[in-house]
Image (tube, rainbow over all chains, first blue to last red; front, side, top):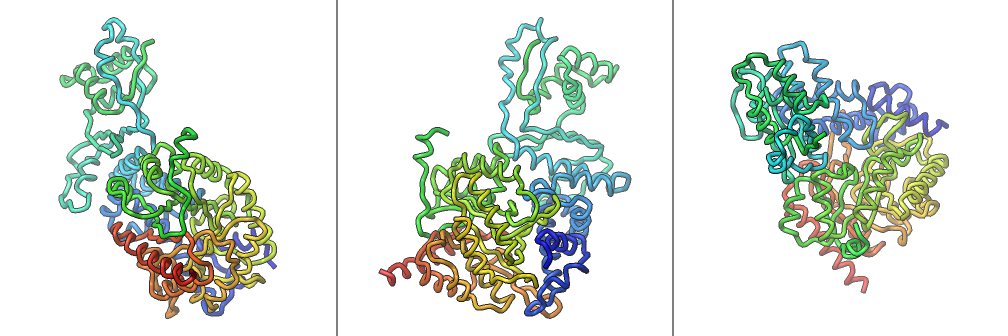
Amino acid sequence: MNSLRSLQDQCYRAFLLGDAEALLPELVSREIPAPISVQVYQNNARETYRKALLASYPVIERLVGEDCFRGLAQKYMRDYPSTSGDLQNFVVAFPKFLFELYGDSDYAYLPDVARLEWAAEEVQLAGESERIDLDALSRLDPGRYANVRFSRSKSARLVCSPYPILSIWKTNQPGQEADVDLDSGSEQVVVRRHNGSVELNLINPIATSLAAHLDAAETLEGAARALASELGNDPNFNFTTALQQLTSSGLLSGFVVD
Amino acid sequence: MTASQTRERPGPIPATAGIGLRGPHHSQVLTDTPSIAWLEVHSENFFAPDSIAANALERIRANYPVSLHGVGLSIGSAGPLAREHLTKLGQLVDRFDPCLVSEHLCWGAVGGYHLNDLLPLPYTDEALDHMAERINEVQEFLGRQILIENVSSYMEFNDSTIPEWEFLAAVADRSGCGILLDINNIYVSASNHGFRATDYLDAIPVDKVGEMHLAGHSVQVYDDQTILVDTHDAPVCDDVWALFEAALRRFGTRPTLIEWDSDLPALTTLLNEANKAQEMMDKAHELAA
């Protein structure tokens, strides 16, 4: 008699890895022939994982088509096998998987769109942060602005791409039909949870750069200097405008003054 | 959560019909507060404590008795129990004070890898010892009794020496857990493996059954072989309703759930299925009186 562990190993190899040689002699072949039993569980696994990915990445499915998505799901479940009883954890690495497949191809926008879809999922799972108190910020003594440090909202994500990812996302929602010119330029998107729903909005690239400098644990003064150095004589650069866009985007949840 | 708030929550779950609550119906249940005695949710869908779904369940729980039904703990897996998963379940139990907590008579992970399926065990003495011990561990951790549900199956092991129904009864006897009897799963497995569904019912101790499940299944064909698969994507079929009637005669009325997970229909469809179950339960109750 096989140990419980041994039988379970054999099932895993048969159902997930397609190697049923060791399992087949262990199965009863009466009403259901053993090879059919294996096929049923293999099919169940493929469907479970495809549906889990589809629930989080419906735009990717629409972009690549059902058959291709089915193939991607099968490859993904082997390359990134599930290590959790919670399927939410299984789908996390799908953007990385798509980048490995398509990062250097004409379909390099796919992993970025997947990152956007995952961000929308992630903010639904995260807590809802307070919005930054703009009144308190405006009341602050201007002499202290230099030492302001901002904190990021846990209910917002910034997704940047050289591709028009928000336009792609919007035109691939149910009922939408439109072509997007992939060469129409980059888009930076703030995905945030607000009042129990998820919003996706574009944000100015300069505000995005400011957010990156603030992320580097810099004070407002430090971030302003770094941003000015990065942008040089860019005629579009206006620090106050960038800060206003950033504070109204939902990416920031608060501030402290050193 | 204060003690007074906990006391205000509805419960326990009556011996009436309820429905499985899934994400797309959360907002409608919150706004319409439909007339249904109780709701059951999948535990794993609420593991993120601050998620939109968990916040919705907090408000839903204020209006309805709720049962937590786990699909990922893999109690029958040979490796160590997934403590992180169990810890999250414990946090959920503490927070939502569910009226029932249930898991499955199954395994689903090996060597740290998960199949995310409800896989049948070999019905052996080793598996029985293991399952009873692990259910004890879960119950001790949670500080409460859980119900264990029979699963649909599409394979049987040559090593099995105990009929599934005797195995389930023995697990309940040795661990002290209750039984969640899934009528559709009995029907599916009986059809696939050629046993009599009523033999299954007859072997289950009446006093152990704490809940029943009803669901739809699909008929799939593999190389000319017809298999019933527990897909939870269709109405309860006539044969399963008939088996439910037999279960009511044997066990009396129990909290009974309409489960529907894939191709989720409008909420009213689920409520209509629950009404049908309730009518049968009322009739059974009258006949027994």
